[in-house]
Length: 333
Ligand code: SF4
Ligand code: MG
Image 1 (cartoon, rainbow, N blue to C red):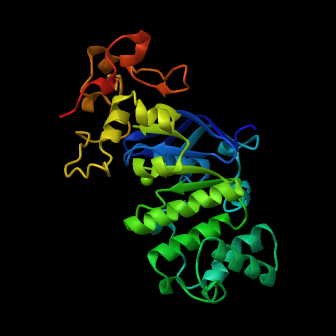
Image 2 (tube, rainbow, N blue to C red; image 1 turned 180 degrees about the horizontal axis):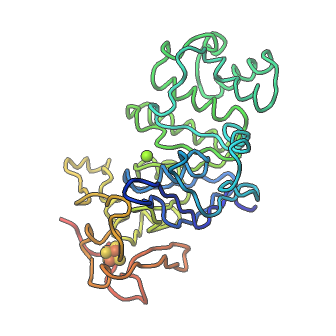
Image 3 (cartoon, helix red, strand yellow; image 1 turned 30 degrees about the vertical axis):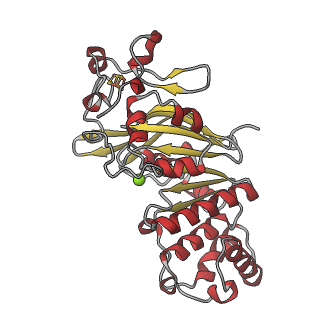
């Protein structure tokens, strides 16, 4: 079917004392029904601002969102705050890394779980509470009937994240946006939460936009990925292709930074340098200061996204007109 969401030429910037700072600079992507799309990059690449833009949560008056965010044919980039409140938590749900939207300590789990049903669906308390219990069971929490009467501090971090997932899924959203949903959890709990999200994705057909810096999460969850660097998409394609044959030097670096479970390597490669401050690079490829393959042209001209026959897309001068060596031919020592 047609995409659940289609983002076209999204530009998000912030007005500061130093002028307008671009954080997301003209990105295009879509999520198909029931699909899990990974949006990947280091922190500061613009991926969280992308998710905030989609949800209409870019803080005003300093934030500016331009472009199209088409959700079921409606452009959310120009929707009113009133309209966005109808969509958020209902048709588009979100889960964050815990600190951002931890549960409210003064309300019971049940009160918080039922809120969106009562607001968006006008369900009565009894109906909504029965659905809350059902959702807690669905996300694998024990003693669901008692749990709805308890407060967040009575739960472990892993249990709280299950509650957040239950809360996100309770209105049966078309799209779930998950921003680093497992980053704050320990490794064992992380794996369980990813398992749960995979299961829910299969059973409910909710599409997921998975925002993460962790390629392990991507390998586990996603069918397709978009790699972001400095506010732009630098590579896109299906996960298998990109893991086997990454083309952009940034993607190559990210993949070489993933711990190899089989070899139990002690030292990991990490990409030298840092993500540039938004707006600090005016011309050329924004990855050039960190790129071992940078050429004179890279400093002057910004490469465009180039498509390959297998659907992979890459933004790098190495792949213009078949010239230059592939970035992944060079061993990094
Ligand atoms: Fe490196 Fe040049 Fe490709 Fe940018 S365009 S990633 S600097 S080779
Ligand atoms: Mg982030």
